[in-house]
Length: 430
Image 1 (cartoon, rainbow, N blue to C red):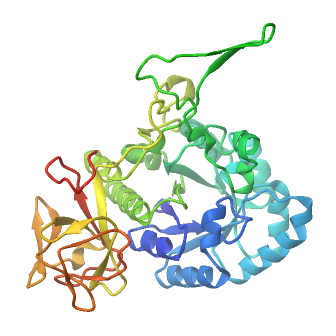
Image 2 (cartoon, rainbow, N blue to C red; image 1 turned 180 degrees about the horizontal axis):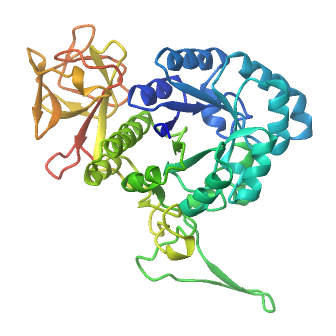
Image 3 (cartoon, rainbow, N blue to C red; image 1 turned 90 degrees about the vertical axis):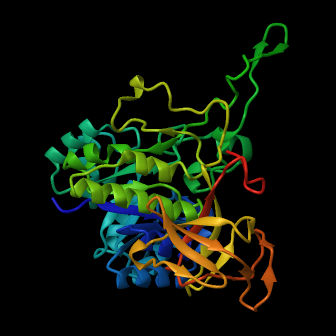
């Protein structure tokens, strides 16, 4: 079996480039409301999507186009035009979610592989076989499936590619089959506009229909009221088990609406874990160090390795989101000579360098500052904050669009971050 693919989300052109530069073998992205991520779909135009495909193909990487929404009858003609337009850009696959759209895409774009979305909720060999016979060359299995079931599917259907989620947000329902958002705000989950109502805090009441009495239930302190808030999936420490099973073809990271830093760190970490697996080593502490640097809802390894009834720790009941261990202060532009501020940065701050290519980092010292190594990590210390126009600043804040000069050229899309500590009052406490 060939090396397992690492598949990353691409919410816009910048995130597409970042994911690829940081190690993804392929990315998935979409244009328009036929994608299940309307916000990210709006980030791409047909022109920028084509530019992203060309960027990926030039580097030997792949782009899968998401057309995984659930169309109404009134939209079928528009959907046909959309499939043909996307197909003309020559993506490496189309991701679809329903039997009807699968058949339609096969008819309109017969030369493009078809991947079945996790929205189809494939959990067994019966469904996998039907969809494979209908034309799906790959199935993105339900998040609730077990590795044992994947082995059985592969044994029966050896030519069918299997893709599994290894990181990202978890849905309260079966992979998006939720109506709470529709009920409360009219935003339909399977139409790409889920309002994430499961992330809200709720008050609980008990009603007596005979008397009309309504009691508010008081919770014990510390239990919390985020009663439907699922933790984020994190399987970085189980890559050996997953890849070692020999039945998984692609590891998928969720998150087209998440930040550019998220796109970078997840691609970097899971590529590291894959590289380690193929070199017969593992460093789970290092993987989790990187993943904990991002905002998260708490982490769980969920159901692929463990059966659902064995897990009682997959929800964060007392908070919806927590800060990561690090704060991103800047991102290097595509010239590599400047960075754009993402959070308050002051002259004298030592910022850790998170680069897509550490082999290109070199020790440097100059008037502006220095680039150096400490404890096997790279840092940049800025003696002065000098804008592209030559103006010197004592500090720079998020929202400031002035590019800030670096002591030496760094790879494009390198991130500069700082660890939150009590003795740095301008950095948020964790």
